[in-house]
Length: 241
Ligand code: SF4
Image: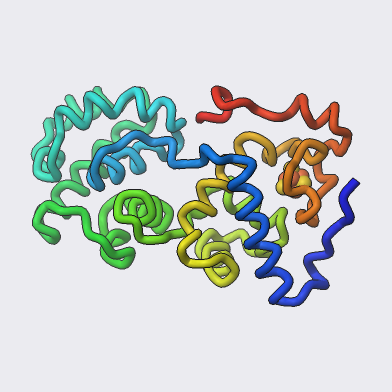
């Protein structure tokens, strides 16, 4: 059984080192960690990320090939036939709001950015339907600009690891930015998301089968017996959601 880490008693330097070790080990545990949304350019990633709200990545990937083919440019979203776009987006849920966002997004890109997706966080977050989370996904994966995406998994794991005490995603992001090397911001998010999907679940984390247990102050939040924990591990197909 791993020694329990006391995150409240560690120095800032020790926490930084532990955070970086966690990111490194998560990379060994999940070498395939990468964004699960399919895309071939920044606009497609922006659209896919907007569609992924309240929807699985798998479902978004089923819908996007036809959407990307029909709407290849920002202008095509701006001038879309609303009913037709809504029909295409229906399987992703909240399709009226999402159609609205994509049409507004297309219009804003045409009006303010010559139809191109901007490269800066402060510009991206001015677009309709684009918050910090979406902006960081786009920066990190379409523009190779490091960004920490705080989704539900990254928030939960960061708190369990004792790397933050905050619930507000913006504050969690700031805490992680201070601990993790800039070049690893994007991959750290991807690795935490994979670990959250496969091992460190919201309800019953598989602590007894967790490869970063010895660095985690929350060890014991889920079953610690190897046999019980092994049954909680999700495979690739189940985790690819
Ligand atoms: S599964 Fe348990 S030990 Fe592993 S990161 Fe989650 S809470 Fe910590």
